[in-house]
Image 1 (cartoon, rainbow, N blue to C red):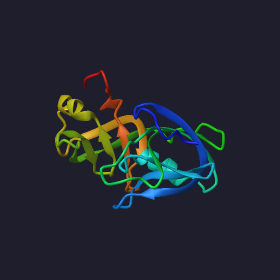
Image 2 (cartoon, rainbow, N blue to C red):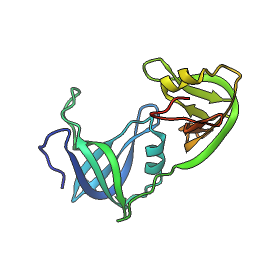
Image 3 (cartoon, rainbow, N blue to C red):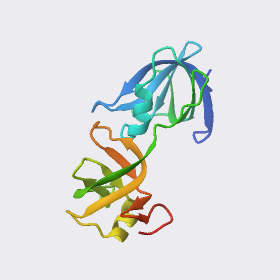
Length: 184
């Protein structure tokens, strides 16, 4: 059963049966509801996180889950109907640890446009094949890519939330090692 009072940054492992997905007003998956010994418990996530949404979409009602999360705390919008946690990770589905749906992929194409981080700085490029190559802002600056440039990028890939194209976390761009802690 969920713990009703604890420090908000402490992670708790909570077990229960999957009941339903929780949708954002824009139609994305922003969490799930589980039944924990008759008590509804909600876990929220970022609806923009396609990898989490992909895993949650595959769940079936009644599956036994073990989820790690931190209590969200009181909302300025009012009291919650049940316990609410920020999802850290799904630790087990029917007793088995899920494997991330990440595959290593190669993306080839021409730069169609830049993609922008929430704060407005370009953080990668969208290719003419629909793939988004994520480089982070400093990586994109170091690469010096321009609209129309040919790109071959390699790294872990996941489907985009739109279902068209993938996001490639760049580990190699145009044959050069690339990624966190490296420069192009």
